[in-house]
Image (tube, rainbow over all chains, first blue to last red; front, side, top):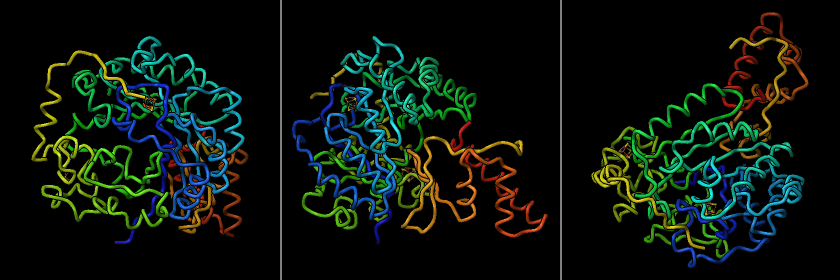
Amino acid sequence: MTAPRPYTLIAELTYRCPLRCPYCSNPTDLAAHDGELDTDTWKRVLGEAEALGVVQVHFTGGEPLARRDLEALVARARELELYSNLVTSGVPLTKERLAGLVDNGLDHVQVSIQSARPERADAIAGYAAHPQKIQVMRWVTELGLPLTMNVVLHRANLDEIDELVSLAEDVGASRLELANTQYVAWALSNRDALLPTRAALEAAGEIAARHKARLQGKMDVLFVKPDYFGTTPKACMDGWARRFIHMVPDGRVLPCHAATSITTLRFDSVEDRSLADIWTSSEALLAYRGEAWMPEPCKSCDRRAVDFGGCRCQAFALTGDAAATDPACQLAPQHALVEAARSREPGERRYLYRGR
Amino acid sequence: MARDPSFIPKLANKARLRFDRHSGSHMIVYPERGLALNDSAAKIAKRCDGTRSLTEIVDELAREAGVDAEGRADVETDVLAFVDLLAQKGLLEP
Ligand code: SF4
Ligand code: SF4
């Protein structure tokens, strides 16, 4: 099989972050992943990614602002004509630094907000950052850059859709992502404290749909439902190692942010091999690329080219077998695992905060 | 959607039109995705720069293609359809 063309590089520059969100997608064994690529290696990798077909790069983390060489990497992306997006919590950032990043060619900023209410937001983030985030969003639009406001939804903020939309309008976002928590990494550890009720979810979805219609053409409102409440799984990453290259701070190349949780796979690093070599022949990327690995019922299902059998990380986390049909699918032999989780009595809301 | 011919389309702030050396055609890149364009779409997209009205875009393209009145009507249909598609995808300034 020839490798498909990747379009997007997700570059996790660091796992360092002052915040401690209980749904953080970074690995739960953070301390085991403290290595970071140096500037020159990232520059090389950006070039290799462009050569493979990548047209956009998301600089993320952790908190990418923790890297002092972010400016240099943004400049390198611009030189390669890659569309660059900074995915940030906005801490720590000054307007001067942001303006510098814009001068270096930054195209877009995405700021994540924990809640529209300051006290709630800080309780969720485990850090007092809310006013700073609002400030950062205003700077982004003042500097003329397009802004996406992102909110991870869960039981403690699902009742805030109206407020969140108003906030996004107020700061001038061009896109609002209301994304329900995906239960991998820290979020899985906190699942009982995060998982909403179906009623709350449906109410939130309806409110979001109303705003979406009202704001059509002005602001893009996206509401991502949690797969736990659907009947079919998400088209996770548009397929394993198909459109997205996900890189973690130490240089390993993954199909998605959570894949190091699949402990049966060994991911290759750009410190040992070129990105092109890894993309076309790394065993871990070949493991679930395409359809050959699929078990029944996926193998003979019409939706296999639509959802690719769902999320491998979720399959592994819940069943111990990364090749199993995603239990979020109602046809999955182990769908009962998801049913049990979502019908459980709401747990006490005490978060296990992400470590540092 | 019926649009006023004097409407001046402009690509959204987040959208960047660029040539893609891998496919040999243009694409519009934005944070969520990329939109691959064929040649005629690329010609329209290039003119959605906030300086020309729909009528002017149609006139320019018709002149460039050297078409008659009937041909101009086809160009107009293409332009309106493509501009609507851009708007639908949130790739046009409101
Ligand atoms: S989810 Fe929260 S803790 Fe994790 S990297 Fe993002 S801001 Fe930091
Ligand atoms: S059986 Fe597999 S391919 Fe079919 S819907 Fe479920 S996860 Fe998707």
